[in-house]
Image (tube, rainbow, N blue to C red; front, side, top):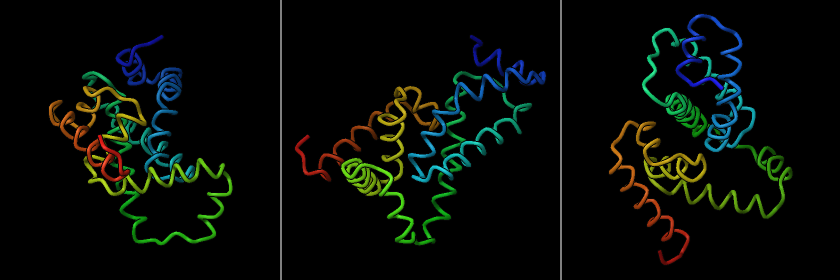
Length: 173
């Protein structure tokens, strides 16, 4: 199994196998991240592909400094934010909503809607921390690297998010 450093070195030399290994290693995680943020599988796939395109476009300038995965999350996060800015102006058609709901089990849909509604009530910086920690299962240090903020700030935001989520869900602590 190649380390990221070796894969990047081989990719810079044009090794097609290294590109394939790299994409296979990170595609599902980035796709899950994008899908969580945009809730549309087609757009999530497009955003995931665009994440890799942007990474590969700047590959010659990229210098390995640790976890490449964090850099991919940063690119994907920026793409998702741009996507969300564009879609806030576009109202969702009722038919589209009904199609999405009918594909899933009713209790899963209700849980998903509840979670999405509660997370939308959090400030963006807290929602992002919750998403990375609970849904992407990143460690606090990885979140710190991904968001390029200090570890104490990550811990503080996670604590604040938990307090606000407990309050929004009507639970004590």
